[in-house]
Amino acid sequence: MRRDKKPIGRWFGEAILIFFSVFGAFYFDNLRDESNQDDLYLRYLVDFRSDLIKNQQKFAFELSPEFNQNTNEGYLNNILSNYALLDTLLKVPSRKNGDSLANLIDNDIIRGVSKWIFTSKQYEKLSSDYYSFIVNDDLRGKLDAHFRDGLSRHHHKDAINEDVLRFEQNIEDHLNFTTYRTPENRAIIFGNQCINMIDRLENEFINLKNFTQTSKSNDSLLIIEIETELKEWGVEY
Image (cartoon, rainbow, N blue to C red):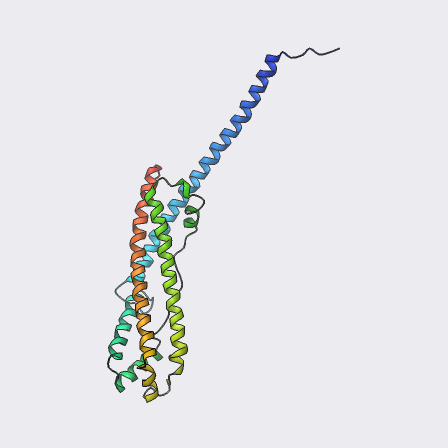
């Protein structure tokens, strides 16, 4: 016995119901995904702000005017004061100054710096996956400046360490530290190569200090822009 055919209107109604059921499921799934992505973005933003605040303390540690030999706090100003001493001694090529310079070099007055540069996984996410989520245009600019500042400090630290290595190979390794008071030591120390290398290193440390101060200042502005962004999203921090 043949079954009765469904009226075409019923077929049409069921098709519409199925369509809206599937469409509704996709729509609410997308809403849930977007909400999850928003939550992740805001979490990265809050965490990045916390990292930047902690790093402000590290900048202050590096730039401190008071040097602490035990912790190395204020090492940048201490190193620059050492180079000022080297400059004073190099200006008068006497036997006494030559012996003093050899002694200072033997005690590692010419030294490199840590390669450590502040990095954050949150920054990587914010500058790539979640860059389009940012509603505050000034925040985008400050994020770009943060990256450039870090890159500059990284390059200057690398340059310092490379030049310290050259100084060791071309100057320090040729000095006789068993007996400071030799004409040969004084000839090396007061030679143009040594003077030029010390002058170059001093300038690189001045640049590093300047870039460190710039990074500290720019990051403090970045924190303000992050807080503005969080307010736009209605998030308390």
